[in-house]
Amino acid sequence: MTTYEARLEGREEIAERTMALHFDKPTGFSFKPGQAIDVVLIDPPTTYTQSARHTFSIVNAPFQDELVVAMRMRDSAFKRALKSLPIGSPVKLEGPFGSFTLHNDRARAAIFIAGGIGITPFMSMLRQAAKSQLPQRLLLIYSNRRPEDAAFLTELQELEQRNENFRLLATMTEMGKSARKWDGATGLVNVDMVKHCVGGLVAPIYYVVGPPAMVRAMQDVLSQAGVAGDDIRTEEFYGY
Ligand SMILES: Cc1cc2nc3c(=O)[nH]c(=O)nc-3n(C[C@H](O)[C@H](O)[C@H](O)COP(=O)(O)OP(=O)(O)OC[C@H]3O[C@@H](n4cnc5c(N)ncnc54)[C@H](O)[C@@H]3O)c2cc1C
Image (cartoon, rainbow, N blue to C red; front, side, top):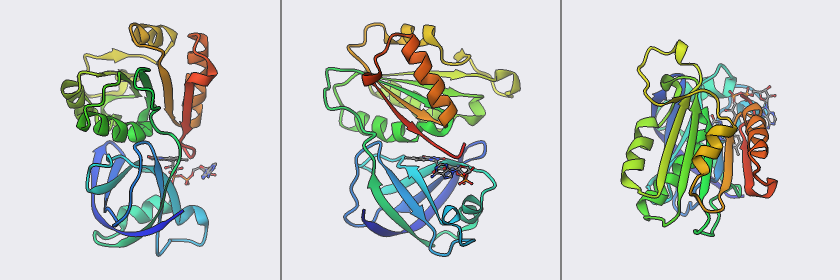
């Protein structure tokens, strides 16, 4: 795996307790949508490996000339350090790695299921698909507790307008705790929702990303919906 040095160019809040970090893209860095990198602090807050290095999916698409990661902010030593890292500071990036990338058979649709911050690898795939006018049917089921927690929601709605092959189904599971208006779907992703979405899509392959408990729950739902294990690909964001 290659190690690169990059600079922190910006930091922004993209949903409640959710931060995106922008780095300059090192010369020679290339990746596929869906791949991840390790962000390694040059001056870590403690000697524990876990406070020096974390894995993140790359949010931006290959055609874009920066590197972006996004994360739920929690009170871990690594994230505290990242939150206060001065803009312009160097970090190490190791990678890219991972095979959680879109299948090549464009005739087969892809159904993405993202739980919360699990949206990150799909953002890269969807941005690239819109840019390259990919002739492949893509459907995203995006589950969050509340609209306040749903990173990139506005951009996803815009991508749906721009890419006729992409459909978005966003669902909120705890609207009772939200201060925002929401006219879309509510409730957990279940067998009926999956069956309803699949209608008309050819031989889809399913991609599921989120915290381990959510990924396991979705595997059960897909299996109950009759989806073969071979057609399900998953990525677990441990730590949540
Ligand atoms: C391929 C991949 C891509 C990821 N992409 C993203 C992303 O885009 N955005 C995002 O927010 N998160 C992503 N994650 C998860 C991320 O790496 C962190 O684990 C997460 O952000 C939690 O970090 P923390 O600092 O809040 O908690 P931490 O304090 O680091 O960890 C919390 C708990 O997780 C456990 N844990 C830590 N490391 C591991 C490990 N290696 N294996 C098993 N358990 C462990 C710890 O024991 C602890 O109990 C990704 C993980 C993987 C594997």
